[in-house]
Image 1 (tube, rainbow, N blue to C red):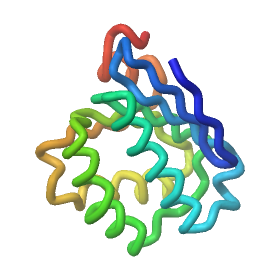
Image 2 (image 1 turned 90 degrees about the vertical axis):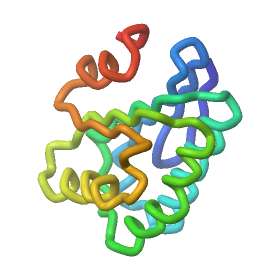
Image 3 (image 1 turned 180 degrees about the vertical axis):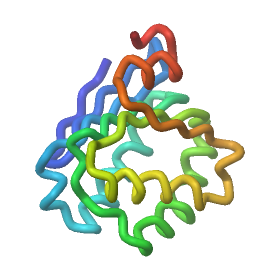
Image 4 (image 1 turned 135 degrees about the vertical axis):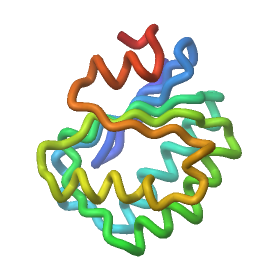
Length: 137
């Protein structure tokens, strides 16, 4: 396992389970759009470097709003990279805030490549991890 700590999100890579775990921090409320892009690009780079196929996202403390231009950037730049490096599943533990939930879900629902990338949203850590890889639970 390898840990990458940033001001807004911590990453843990687990080659055994093929999973990149992302733990958003409350400081994400202060994150700029460019800092969001850096965080997501870091996720792609870590997944590629460690040859991972799943991403677990703990978004319970994610407080940055994904505005339309960020959703479009994610769709056009990041999702193709996920697919190219072999990511097949992304599981989210969702935040309580309804508007943040919607912005996260819209990012993937509007995605043209979503058939190649399974994305599911969960209320619990155990359910998300179980769906991604039984070895995570």
